[in-house]
Image (cartoon, rainbow, N blue to C red):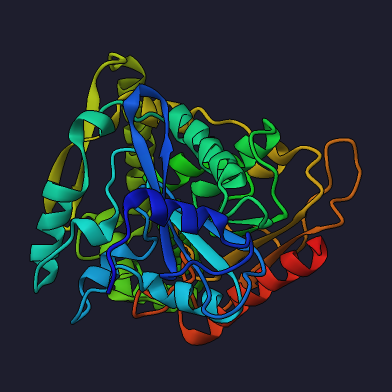
Length: 400
C-alpha cells in the first residue's frame, strides 16, 4: 500500500464531498479551548451513504465520552466504541455520531487497557485524565467548552454542512440549553436523556438528601402497617421496582438493617443538615482548590475545580427556561425507574413564562429503565435504543 504524506492525506480528506462518509469511518477532530487544553471530538460515519445529520452526544457529570463507561468496563471484552450500543443504532439509521469528553480526558480507546474491570478502571484513572487540567475545570467552563465544540463542528470541513442534533445526558442538558440560550450554537433539535427540566440547583439536594428513597420509604410505611421494615420490604410495600444497587442506596439512607417511622424522620433531618453543611463547605473553598472523586474504587485526587460543586448547586435556571426562544424540536426522555431526578409529567412541555406554548417540545417516560435509559444490565435494551433513534428521526424530519 502506498504511503501518503501528511499534507496529501489532509488534502484528500478536506476535498471530499461534505456529506460523504469518512474514508476510514472515523475522524478525530481536535478543538482548542482556553488554557491550552484540547478536547478531542470522536466522529463516526455511516458506511456507503451520506450522513443524514450529525448527532452530538454530550455526557453528564462524569465527563467521559461514554455515558455507559462503568458497565462497559465490566463486559468480557471492552469495546471503547460500543457506548451502550447507541453508536451502531445511530449509524444504521444513517447518522454521523460525535462523542467528546470534558477537557482533561483523553479518548478512551487511546488509554484504557486490561483484561478485567479493575485493570481497565486503573488504566482510566492513571492514563485517561490529566489531573492538572481537571483541577481547573469548573461548571462554567464545561458550559463554555460545550458551545466551543458545537461551534467547531459547525466550522469543520467534514461536519459543517450537517445539521446538528444534540443528545445530552443528565447534566449535559444544562450545558447544552445554556449554550443554546447564549446563542453559542445553532441546533436542529435536542433529544435529552435524563436531563432535568428544572434547575440543577434543585436536583443536587434531591440527590444528596436521598429524596427518591425517602419518598419510597414514606409510601412504604403508608401502605404497610409494620412498625419496622427492611429495605426490600419498603420497596415491596411502596410497589416500586428494586435492584441490588437501589437496595444498597436504601440501606445507606436507613443506616440500620430495619427502618421505623421515627427513624425515617430523624434520618431525613440528618440528611438535610448534611446538605446544608456540605453546601456551606463548598461555598467556602478557595477558588484554586480542587476536589477529588472515586471511580470503580480508585481515587482521583483532582476531578474538578472547587468551584464546580458550588456553581452546580447554584444553577437556579432550568433547561427549559435557558432554551429561551429556541424553535427546534426538543424531546426529553426519562426512564420510569430514574432515581436521580424527579420525573416530570409526560406530554407537552410546560408553557413559557409569558404563557406561550412550546409547540415543538415534549416529555416522554420510558417504562422499566433508569436515569440513562438502562435496564438491569446497566445498558439500554434494544427496544429503548430504537426509541432513542425514533426521537432523533423526529428531530431530523422536523428540521428537514
